[in-house]
Amino acid sequence: MRLLGRIGKHPLHILVDSGSTHNFLDPCLAQKANITPTLDQKFEVVVANGENLIGNGVYLGVAIQVQGTIITADFFLLALTGYDAVLGTHWLKTLGPVQWDFNTMSLQFSDKQGTHILKGTEQQEAQEIDSIQWVVSNAHQVYLLQMVGQIVTQEISNPCMKIDKILTEFSDVFEEPAGLPPTRGYEHAINLKEGTSPINVRPYR
Image (tube, rainbow, N blue to C red; front, side):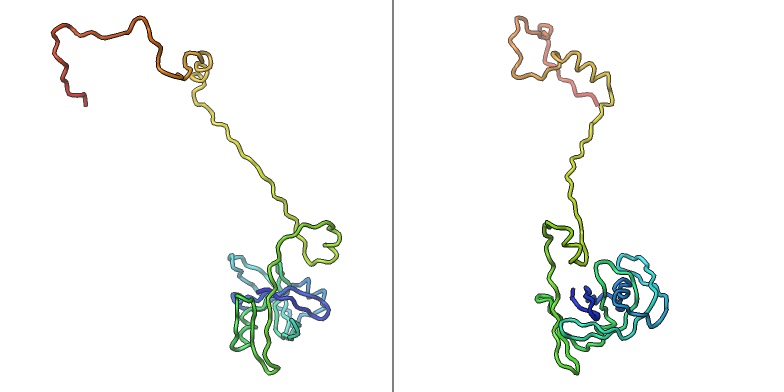
């Protein structure tokens, strides 16, 4: 589930991922928000595709504001793609019983301050833009896609060039018939000797 939040005055895109064991924060966002790592600790993370990523730094007690709710969690510093922060099971387990509705994309939990309902952001469709300068100055990320149609043709080579040459040279002879053969003045026939009985021979094997 995707959420929009803030660290101080800096907006960030958050992914709530129950498949992630820990919480992660992108170093670019941490630098913008001027957050100093609490622990200088290197660690290794195995992502879904089996790739190993190396991170360095741990942030303790980072406060994030999401839809009026203050979320305080510990984060590992790791370069992320598409998101500024990931909230994993390390944070979800601190909530106790939760109600996660994927139809409405909402997460409901309760604490000492009361009941909180976090609404996930909807997936936006791609839109045609007129001014790339405005998008760069106002958007967090910009993607440029180009779809090119390509027709691939493959010539089938004739392994026997002599046959191809003969077919071309005598094209009138090898022309495909358009109907029945014409009536000829002499029809070729094989006449049997008079008195010969019908041939009854088993076929060769």
